[in-house]
Image (tube, rainbow, N blue to C red):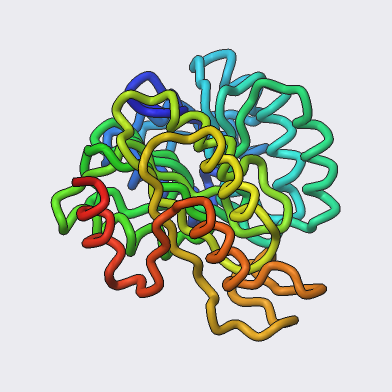
Length: 289
């Protein structure tokens, strides 16, 4: 079993005719993902790798029965594209776009409130159920089916962790990046709830980073309501206050969001925290035994 995406996922790529959209459409198709439509206003009637292109998302959903979108839309237009996906009642909207203005995401968050659509991202690598489907930009070949769920704020660290898990003989049930911006569609807790109810997920790895308080909130949830093993790593342990590290949301401000505080909260909740990223895979293998 997988969460949010599986063999029944039918993907529409928003921004398919752009260089990034076309490249990753090819990669998703190569992995076996059912990419059934693409959208670029004014480019309807074209075909990309055999995928029909439409002028609007609603037209693509109506004609090709898409239930999930993957966005490669430039930052100034990405918020409207997300809202379009939510309006079309898509089950999952995956936004890869980096650099969306925070005020635009405030508007998206307000529109998303109370809706059934699940927004993953923005500024994320997407979501993959190994051996079934991938929606996003992660390298499919490093993933393998197995019992470990992965939730991460960082795309590149996700790849490193997945590669380590695969090398120590542990596959993944579902891997997803929640995104590194200050305002994102889903949190660690949202997906921990899904993994808690997934019989094929026996343990979870969470990859956090400096900035915000989502890791501390996840620690409280895990201690109170999550009974599967959790292993964590926090990036940015040497980051100075006030300096952004990589992601827009990865910044220590007002004395909050320090790596040490996050590590302390996680360890206090009984979570195994790995301090050396290079040892994460082996630590997970030991804990999962």
